[in-house]
Amino acid sequence: MEVVVTGLGLISGLGVTLETWGKLLSGYTSIRQHQPFSELGCWPLALVSQQPSDLKWLTHQVVASALQDANLAPPLPGCGVVIGSSRGYQAKWESLAHQYWQSPSLVPNWLDTLPNIAATTAAHQIRTTGPVLAPMAACATGLWAIAQGFELLQTGQCQQVIAGAAEAPVTPLTLAGFKQLGALAKTGAYPFDCRREGLVLGEGAAVLVLETLASARQRRAKIYGQVLGFGLTADAYHVSAPEPQRQAAIAAVQDCLKRSGLSASSIGYVHAHGTGTQLNDQAEAHLLQTLFPSGVAVSSTKGATGHTLGASGAIGAAFCLMALQHQILPPCVGLRQSAFDLDLITTSRPYPVDTALCLSFGFGGQNAVLAVGAID
Image 1: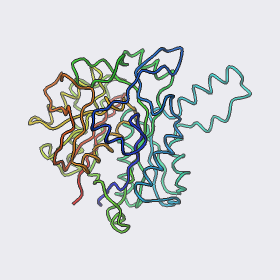
Image 2 (image 1 turned 90 degrees about the vertical axis):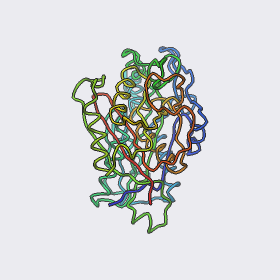
Image 3 (image 1 turned 180 degrees about the vertical axis):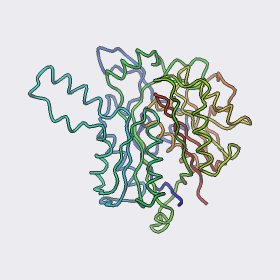
Image 4 (image 1 turned 90 degrees about the horizontal axis):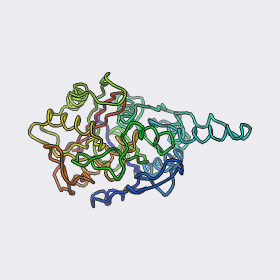
C-alpha cells in the first residue's frame, strides 16, 4: 500500500511556518547566545522565541499547521496519532520539583505532565478515537514515529495518521547534562566542519500528515511525496558514544533501502544527523563513505535549527520532502571547511532529486533511517 504525505507542520528556531524553508535555503541560522537560567550562564541556543517554549504549545501549533496544510479539520475520529518526544515534559517536572520544595501545597496536578503528553494533546486536539502512540527513542524518536505511522497505514488500521515529534529540551538539567558530557558547543553548530565543537540545543516540532494514496486522491489532496520505507537498529554498544565501525547503523540504512526497493546509487540526497560533535560526525562520515563510495549530496540542517533531539528526525524528514517538492537541496549551514571527503552542500543546490534518505542516531545506539520519494 502506498503511503503519501499530504500535509506538513514545522516549527523551529527558524520560525513557525513552512516559510522557514526560505530561511534555510538562504543559509540563515537561528542560533543565538541566550541565558534562560541565571545559574547556568550564557549558551548558544536555537529558541522559537526569546524564552524556552512549552511542549503543549509547540504540539498544538505544529498539529494545527499540519492540518491546515493538508486541508483537514477536526474532528478526525479515525485518524491515528504518533507523536513522540525524547524529553517529554521534563521542563515542567523540573519546575514542579522546585515548586514542591518551596511549597508542597501549591504544586498542581503532575499527571498533566506524563511522558505521552504530546501525543495525547494532539489526540484531544483532533478529537480522534483511533490509535495514539507516543514513542521515545532519544534522537531517533521523530523517524521512529513516522515509521510507526507508516505501519498503521500499511496494516490497514488507519487511512490517515498524524506523525512526528515535538521537543522543548531547553531545561537546566538538560543543559547541565550535556555540559557535563562535554558535548555542548560554546559558539555555534558547525556540522562536519574542521572547527566543530559540539551540539547546540534547539527546540521545535514537525508533524507529517500521512495518508494512503487512495485516500489522498479521493479527496484531491496535494501530495509532497511518498514514504518508501524505513530501517531501525540498535548498536548495543554504549550509552552515548556511537559504535566506531557503525555496523548496526549501516544495517539500518541497508534495511531501509531493501524495504524501499532502492539501491544506494538511486539516492539523490541524504539529510544527515550531523550534530557537530566530534564522535557523531566522524562516525557518520565513515557510514556515508562506506555506503555511498561514488558519493551522494549530503547536508545537515542543525547549523540552522540547532539539535532538536527527538524532533530532529521529523524536522529532517520535512526538509527532505520540501527538497523533493522544490527540487532544491538545503545547505549544511555553519560549514566552512569540511573535515571529511563528502559531497557536502555549502549553498542551496538546485538538483533533480527523486529520492532522499533522512538519518537519525540517538543515545543508547538507536539508529533510524527513513526513505522518501517523489510520487508519480
